[in-house]
Every structure is written in structure tokens, then in C-alpha cells.
Amino acid sequence: MARRVPPDRLAAVTDVAARVFIDRGYRQTRMADVAAELELSSGSLYNYVESKEALLHLVVEHGLGRRPPALDLPVPTPTTGATLRLVEERLRREFVAPDLQDALTRERADDIRAEVAAVLAERYDTVERTRDVLMLVERCAPDIPGLGGLFFRRGRRGATADMVTYLSSRIDAGQLRPVPDVLHAARYVEEAIAWFAMHRYRDQDSAMLDDGLSRQTAVELGVNALVMP
Image (cartoon, rainbow, N blue to C red):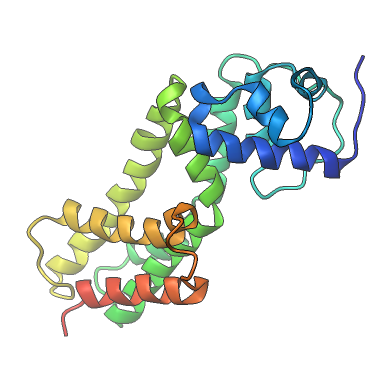
């Protein structure tokens, strides 16, 4: 029989489940692990979700920084492909880059330092804002058929391709430094941003790093590396 629980209690379930999935990956996460973190018996977690598949779907749809509404419980096991479609929709909606897309419509920048700073800051802010979703998908991708292709081939590689196109256009215009290979340069910039905007939050030796200074450092060093003096 379906029942409802307060949203605060359901938020605790999604928060803990997200953390365990990110720490262990999908395959190594057991329902008992999540239940233990919530101080529930293993069987009690099934009052919230029918299965581990349903738990992951719940996290993607209503967790990761969101406050879940009151839902009829237990959450049913999703149909085949439903979670992948949900991940794709959320990434498409949240991983946007209007400054970069606008820059791609121009042959040259009026102020190249300002333009590059805006493009890198936009990428930084997007990664930081969506870091929990990205870490969850990246961590679980090896364990779920189709998720790796969605994240790496259709997600990250598409964003990298846009960065390559942008850097190439400004190098050809003589506004950025020539580099040995534009793809490698794009990945270098993106990985530096990703570390400061996302991965440092899981690095036990980086707690002393300030959020604002991390953003400023990643953007300014990126600008200085790309723009000719």
C-alpha cells in the first residue's frame, strides 16, 4: 500500500544515497550500506524504494541539491531506459553555455581577455553548480550500460568539441597563443576547471581552499595561459 513521508525524511534518503553512490559506484553500493548510513534496518529502506534501481532514479530525479516533494512510497522500479532519459534531460537542461555559444557566432573578440574570462567562468560555474550530478554520473557510468556513452560521448565530448572550436577560431584570428594541439589545450583548461570546481570537494587535502579564490585562480590562470601578453 502506498504511503507518504515528510519531504525532510525523503531528502535525507536521497542525500545519503547520493553520497554512497558517489563514494562506491552503482555496482558496489548495497541497499544495506544506505540503510546503515540512515540508521535504518536493511528492510526498512524498501519502504521508501522498491529496489536499488528505484533508489538511483529517485536520487537523479529528486535529490542532488533538490528538495523532494511528498511522494507515494515505495518508489517503483523504473522502466528500462527511464533513468538514462532522466539523466540526459537533466544534463541537457543544466549544462548550458550561452557565453560560449555567443562567442562562437563572432569571428573575433573585441576584448579577448574579457571574452576568455567569461567563457571559462561560465564553464566553472556550470561544473560547480552541477558537480553532484556530474560526480554521480561519472562514478556510476562504468556500471550502467548506456550511461557511459551518454556522459562521455554525448555529454563531455560535445562540450569539449565546442571549446576546441572556440580556441581554434581565436588562435586562427591571432588572438590566442598557438598551441601544439588544440584538443589537448582544451582538455587541459577543462580539467583544471573541473578539479577546482568539482573534484577538490572530494579531496581530503583541499579543505583549506577558498571557494571564491578557487574560481578566481582557475579563471585567471586559464586566461593567462591562453591569451598572448
